[in-house]
Every structure is written in C-alpha cells, then in structure tokens.
Amino acid sequence: MSYQDIIKKLETAALHPAKTVTEQIRKTGKDAFGCFPIYTPEEIIYAAGLLPVGMWGGKTELKLADKYLQSFCCSIMRSNIEYGLKGTYNMLKGIILPTFCDTLKCICENWKAAVPHIPIVPIVYPQNRSIDAGFVYMTEELQRVKGEMEKITGRTLSDDDLEEAWELYEEYRRTMREFTDTAAEYPQIIGAKRRHLLIKAGYFMDKREYTQDIREIIAGLKDEEKKPFAGNRVVVTGLLAEPAELLDIFEENQLAFAADDLAQESRQFRTPGGTEGSVWQRMAGRICDQRGDTFLYEEEKSRGQMLIDMVKEKEADAVVIFMMKFCDPEEFDYPIYKKELEAAGIPMLYLEIDQQMDSFEQIRTRVQSFAEMLA
Ligand code: SF4
Image 1 (cartoon, rainbow, N blue to C red):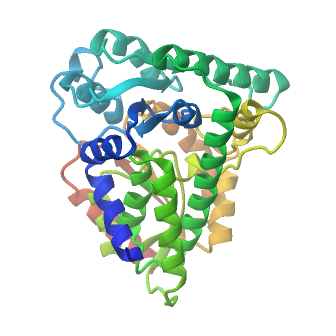
Image 2 (cartoon, protein in one colour):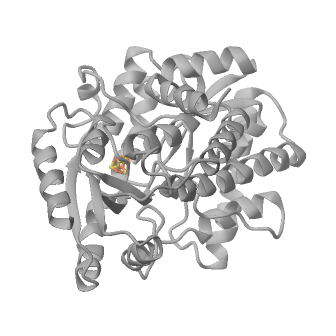
C-alpha cells in the first residue's frame, strides 16, 4: 500500500469510529474497552488483551443525555452519555474514567445508573505530582486499576504482559512525536484537517497496526520534496480541534499547524516515559513529568511559557486557542497564558467550540480576518 493509501485508510478510520472499532475487534479477536478523556493508562488495557478505544464524544442529536447532565456540561461528555444510553457503546467490555473535572466526577456516578451494563473503572490522578508522595500514590493507583481490570477480565496480568504493552506504547509515542514534527514540514500534504484525522485514528485502532501505518506515512513524507509554504503557521492549544469541518476553514485560509498543545493530540504523547525503576514507576513517572498541562496540576503554571517556546522553536506566527465551551479547567488557564502571550507579542485567536455546532460562518469570518492580519 502506498503512503497516500495509508493516509486515506486512517482518515476513513477516524471519520467512522464505530465501523473501525467493529473491524478491529474482528481483525484482532480482542474485546474493546473504552477510555474516557483525558488520560487513561491504555497500556494496562492493552496488556489485559483488550483493544483500548478513545471516547471523545462526537456529533449526535442530544435527547437522552439531558436526564443526567445539565446543558452547561461540555458537549463531549453529553455526547458520551447520549451514546451510552443509545447503545452505541454496547460493544465495550468496560470503561476507564479519570476524574479531572467536576463533570467527569459526576459522570463517574451517573454512568453506573445510566449505563449499568458497562462496568466502570475510575482513576484518580494526584494533584501534587512533583513530590515523592504524589509519585508513590500514582504508582499505587495504576496497580489498583490493574486489579480492577483483572476482576473484569478474569485474567491475571503479569509484569511481563505490562512491560510488552509499555514498550509498544513508548514506540507509539516516539512515532507520534516524529509524525507531528514531520507533518509540519509538509503542510501542502498534511493540512490541518488531515493531521487531526491521522492522529485521531489511533484512538480506534490497535496501536501495533496504527504505529506501523504512521511509520510508513512518515517514510513516505520524507521521500517527498519540501516546498515553501505561502501561508502562515500556527501553534494550536486547547482540548481538541473539532468538529473536523472547522479545520477546512484553516486550510481555506492557508493556516497550517506547526505544532499542537491539544489534549486529544500531542498532550497524549509529547512526554516520554521514564527509563528507571519498575514498569509501574515508569508509567507513573510519565504522568508526573508532564508539564504545561491544564489537567495535571502545577503550582507554577508553565503553559504560557511552553506555548511561547513552541512558537519560537517552530518559527510559528501565532497561537490559536480552541476553547471547548463549558470546559472549566481550560477556561481557568486562559487568562494566565493570555497575559504571557500578549507580553511576548504573540498574536492570538480565541475560538469557542462545541462538538454539536453546525454553523461555522462566524468562525470562518474570524479565521479569515486573522489570516489577513498575519499575512
Ligand atoms: S469539562 Fe473539560 S475536562 Fe471536563 S469532561 Fe468536559 S472537556 Fe473534559
């Protein structure tokens, strides 16, 4: 298969998650296990012989979810509950759910009543990650999750199982870092929407097959001639950059993504795992080492400086903020890094997004004006 065909395969996989997951279940013979945003220890699920599947909401008519979630909850979680109630997630053997925000904390209990046939494993991340107690807690919490997975699957997980899954996921994360760097050099081939879909496909496929596909795309890209790009390059930040149609507007206006700080994208793989200690300690170390992340508490918030450094390093022209409506943690961070980006003289575009939005005209006008301002 040529690398262009692999690109098409992954784009289709990202656009049709249910079909992709069903095919992957058939192909791998594994049962699927759901992963609520934002971070879940997929390695444990993989080591348990299951297929980890990302649950990042989606566009759907919200009818049933209102029974459990108020209209001021973020659209991702309302969609997830809606899908759960409609039976879209019936193929899942269970779900892991982290409790980063008030909405996720409520869902932890709501899910048990709304979708009782799909068992839930909650995971709680430590606030004080930089002290020894936080690290020890994280290590023990991962082992507790392992115990819960063993109860659900009826299978004992050995450290060797986990070691193998860890190596695969570290390879996946290395490959994704290389992919985002390489994609930035070929904006004519990997536009904003394609970049997003290629990364998103990984949530619905077995990581072994997916990582191999991405490696082939990187190799194919590197054989192409690099061409000068006439538009502008931006660093994007936020929870995610969806709906995908939104990204067509960036391509129409010659705005390419030089790098991202999105929870659905680079925040998943930008931090390499530790190399010391047991596999549990390496897994915990990766979470404790992540910086500039809204959801992983830092006393001295470093997100603003991190974005400034990304703009400089990638020679980008601006920062675009994709603000998920009603996502409190992301909203609380904004005034802090806004001030820092302004002081550094970096142009910014703030876009409020919602997965259920179907009119893009206002955003189109704002992106167009921003592109004209940068030109
Ligand atoms: S409010 Fe934000 S962090 Fe919480 S579930 Fe929604 S998108 Fe995720």
